[in-house]
Length: 281
Ligand code: GUN
Image 1 (cartoon, rainbow, N blue to C red):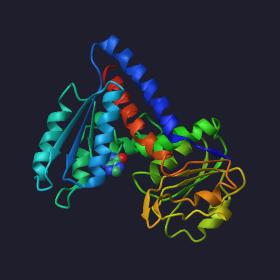
Image 2 (cartoon, protein in one colour):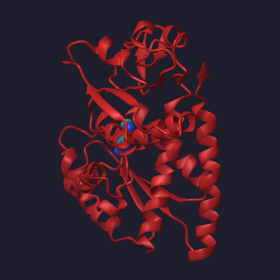
Image 3 (tube, rainbow, N blue to C red):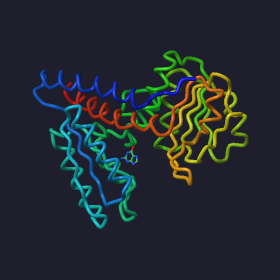
Image 4 (cartoon, protein in one colour):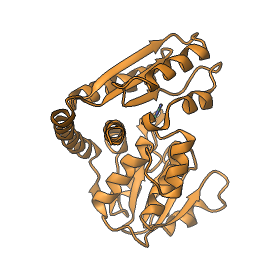
């Protein structure tokens, strides 16, 4: 069984991106820029944003963080986004979620110009992805996709089961697998027999937020299993997949932590560079 090393894959991707940034700098005499807006002081958000800033700087991007207290008015945030939309030095804009309740998340997402939407959350990018056109792709499913492709470059005709239907993970993951000619089943909390669905799968992506939901006897021999879950439990952080049980059946499996997580940030950097490149044409 292969334990998919997300840390190593992310480090390799960052190395490639660093090289690309250096080539873009020579060609255009400027570098891609990522601006993150962080509202409030939630600990996980602070940690994510610090990691994003560190990684962005490491690969040579221009990186900025704009911080607001959680009492900030929605209007202030929307005006800042407009300012960043017209700032040529900003290639990508990310507003860290979750937002305080008084701020309308969808309004904020739609305020970001689609060409600078490094999260791929804008309806224009969601639509383009589902139509098979060029678009920004949400970072976590993009990271999962790259890990799957490393194990199995030809996914055509494979049966994939996505557990979870969120806009952040399940839905975009489904689109990426469809583009690769997989036969995709999306499952969720109302699915009648989740185990039976999973047992059909050559590829399982679990992104549902239920600790160790996917058990050993849910997984076909030699399946590829990608675990997007990050669940706090009494025994520490665990994924949506029961690692020890599933490792007896799977061909390849991502650990938690050290699987999908590190790829997410590397993909954010990739999206920022891709937005920059598209803006130079
Ligand atoms: N909070 C947790 N994950 C994400 C993400 O992928 N993008 C944004 N904007 N906020 C998040």
